[in-house]
Image 1: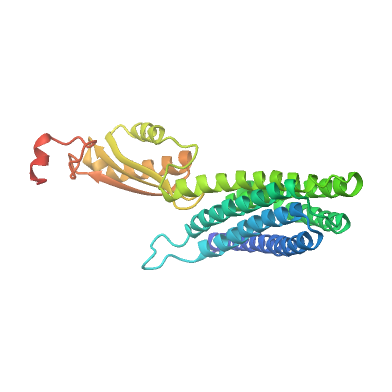
Image 2: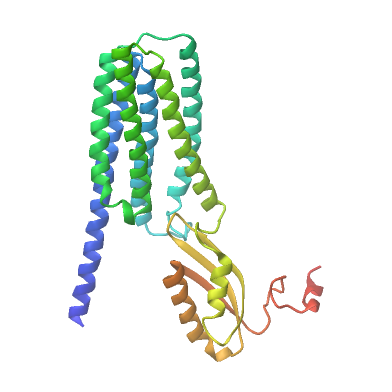
Length: 317
């Protein structure tokens, strides 16, 4: 018995160090990205390069995404309390939603500036622009390298490293634009690139907005079909007569929940059926938290979708 106990402890310990390691990587990525963002904003203002300012804007979005991932990792560890029985997991989604909305404003600003510059070109200190852009490129490579190991098993870190990849493209573009301004005298390359970067931002903002809104509206997790879940559950045990009132949603990306009603042919099979239903939900659909109501005979709330008799509705005046 003691052996099993120590083994469980070891496992818990490795999980904790893994979480701490992940948080450390995120913090490292955040500090680097935020630092680079200030450098690019300053460099853009000093050299007169809109592309650098746009890239700084892109970095701002990513720094926010990294901070979110870090914040979510911290918050998700906080236990649920009396007023928030689900804990703080959804903070990440809420913050993502706000982040997406700010990105739209940012894109509007960049596009407006860029269009103005096509008509009234601004003098650009291409040397400063090139230097800052190259440093930005290097920083992005370092951040991406450090996040890459974890990206496949963590939605948050996956999203963050996707952002950094977008940044990397922005930085490559800024370097190219600086070269074009410096060697070819193509001043238009700067606003042209800033529009390209703002499209990158727009794409990530739209994805983020779509995902966070879907979760906030208690939408069905992506890639999941409630009908398929229902069919699977009907086949779990011979004594299941009906499955209804099935709701599937997620608290934050990755933490799936379900509630449903079961009607049984055989009342005594309750415990066995419950165990089987929970196992199928977890193993096939990744739903960790399920609330299952077993109805005594006909469904007590007599709403459509339940096998209710019409006379049940008489008392709903």
